[in-house]
Length: 344
Image (cartoon, rainbow, N blue to C red):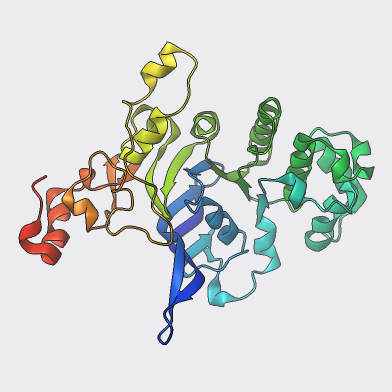
């Protein structure tokens, strides 16, 4: 039975982007992440999917320690990653690494590949021979040993990303955050990088938090999938169940919009859902369910009460009033609005 390697509990990250008012100045906040809960099982690939601005990359940066959370907890193998807001100890930093979206900007152009790969080795594994380890890392990611003498600008986009993966492996991590690792690459190169990541996961027992906006990629890569919308997770399920029986209206809308090339694939997609209205600003998220301005199934309660995550089937959860029990649906709304409760 697998154990939970990463636990996220009530995580929030709000950014102050300005102030309004003249005397009593009130901060204007972007709620990039606004109270999410999920867990990663050791050895799995958890796909976190969402549109630009949904907050998925913010979660990645919190996990690796680039941001401090506004509220909530995050545990790695039971250890609080932000205990006392102190600097994260080296053993924890060693265990969690990240591969960024754009390898062109994440690799130092003034350093050779050898220097880039030696830096984490000197910090986290100072007793080992750095040259031998650089050679081993290049062999592990199927690049020629001679590449250690090259600079990043001498490599193709795919080769740069493979070097970024090798750098993440240098510390012998348990968890790797993949922040859209293939979105900046040509389609012909994406398959090579994905196959490399899958092989490394099998051989090294790695756990991946795979962040992407590409739902079709998750079908073949992820063990489980979580869908984000405006800072919150709206659905989580096993990958196979997720694509066969999507529950949340937003998820169904995303899946129905995936381009396909055959009639069989078209038949497997959920019924087409047209979104109405505009995507809300993350600075001014609507009250109640944040998706209600675009949802074809919107009810009056959706405009006032934020839904909670509920189980729709074993291992499948959705955050939508459509799936809440009647008592759970009506009680909080009735307390606040009395006779205005809508007939649903």
